[in-house]
Length: 469
Ligand code: PMP
Image (tube, rainbow, N blue to C red; front, top):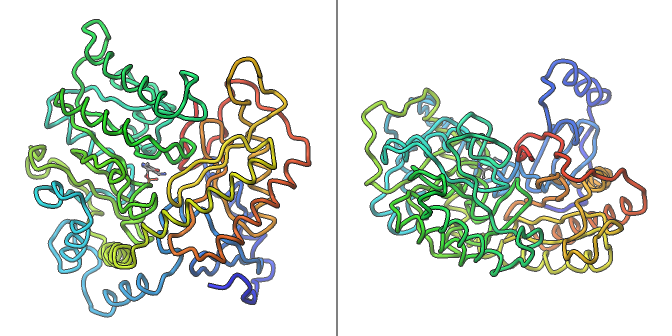
């Protein structure tokens, strides 16, 4: 939709009052609401309209949920159809035509082995519920307890999902190095750094004195989202597949954020051709409404009836909205569009990095893009390390974006990565508007001095953000 449409009638006074009441009533854990003091009253596509009468381009997209942007007509139509049909809205895990259609559409998008011989479990409504189900599934199927997870990971906020996320310490979880080109722990980056990380993993698992008993599974994100937009090289992902397959360790791909076209393929594992044993899916599969599932190889289906249950697993509106979203992305080849537009935007952002030394790195895959802010004056030139992260500057960029009517997310170990997760329906014109505003915001923030991060300091705690340690 055009960025220049007239603003709607504001709700005079409501904006401040609502924000004040929120601050008084809601928990101290509230997060997005702190950095984005917006009171959305209407939204369509990329645009959110606030109660203050302002319009914003939304590149947060419900933390990557809104593949088609806000209130896409096909999503609204699907929801209305269910409402008008008189179908029950709550059915536990009973079969319904709506659920049948959703499952059929989802299976049509999956890697062939999973589509043909996979099982689906509808979980509680959030991504974290599906992660819990995946961990429980592989533990039950293997009879083992330990898990392999990665540095910088984010899988959710419930106990098990948190334990496999990067900030947690849990004796049952072995932490492995996730490849990182810009901040490579081995100082070499790229394919070479990923190769060393894979070797480390392989050696550790085979070392009888490595301290890692045979694990129940390995969980990874094909592109780390909250961890700062870190795409795993395809060769590394194939190595993880080979390492786990050779040792009968189920591989769980958490595609909660990377799924449904976001990275330029329908599922991010398709870039490497890897077929995981379990896929964890949520966010965009519900077409803006809560829905979470796991899909897994039937051999893992050792659950007894009722082994995994829950009241809210039959959200008919979410299934209808989700099926419409999946079909729309597939029919309109929006994954291809995300690949092309994302590559173009990354190219333009490289230009921004060339102009501003405080833009240390620009990376991403498809329409999952990260811009890492750094403190170039503190670069230790002899060390070969990149300059330290600049979280205060990143927060300033986010605020300058907001002033210019652009909503962006922060992520990464130190909350120093500005993240763009625009809808896959983003037009060329909108992409230009987003990048113009971001470039202006970076220039404005770079002109102002900001407090420096102390080495090793944690990121401020944010919803959906990796608890950064
Ligand atoms: N896994 C990944 C990769 C995620 O990005 C997220 C959410 N940001 C989750 C799991 C958890 O999803 P939810 O917030 O819906 O519980």
